[in-house]
Length: 334
Image (cartoon, rainbow, N blue to C red):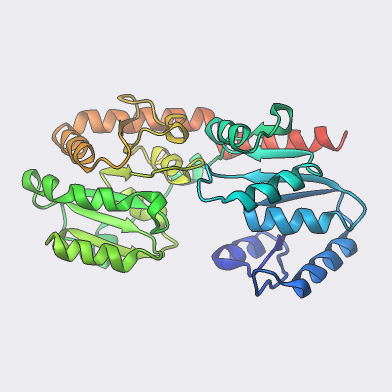
């Protein structure tokens, strides 16, 4: 595995599983030394197939591939990337000429890129994200210890969410929904798992809404699944997505989910079956659905069970890996 900058928090996990991690060390937006080093590494390894992920890696990885004898190139788009400007799209269109396949993680992402960048249907392959359901369902959590660590009193309903604190994730709309929920369930706790550039803004909002005693910002955590295990309900108020793994993980833990009614999420959540859908940027509806599920624990439980059955059938890690294996073998003509 080659990473553009550093291995990040997952590096240790890769090394534990005997997966080598080569850190190229990109330092600047335009970094010629990094690029030459990347080309050198690829020439040494002489790969038959190169698969890149995310815009920066998609760009530099594909460009470098042109200098090593034309291997098969696969690129991945993981989200409905509304942030891309004209020059990002121009780069994508140029590199598409040398790309064998674009792998996307949802039909919504596929349709987005067909429309925005005119990628031909034959060049796009949908492979859904997968999670290790069996491993997740066996998670053992010392609930009392975890609650004590988070400084939460016992037997309080917990609403959870997680992700990077950016505008895309829509966490502000969940924060704005909290006061109404507290009118009906004043002991309810909301845990926000993660961190990001909007953290300080969120903390100010919590202070202004006078809900500090009911909100916990956990920061970056490696025990995300254990924290989700504590929750009664998981809320995903995203404005746009690709395929949010937190929903797959929540379903594996048999949690009811409240999420925004966007195409990317509607591929995972069947409204009224394994969760509830709400309009984008609608705090009022978020609070209504939270209150509804807290008032109806049996419905909440049933939705969690339905979600578990759905993720086990359609979104297992085994199914995802098999799909990638089949694609690699097919494209390499093996």
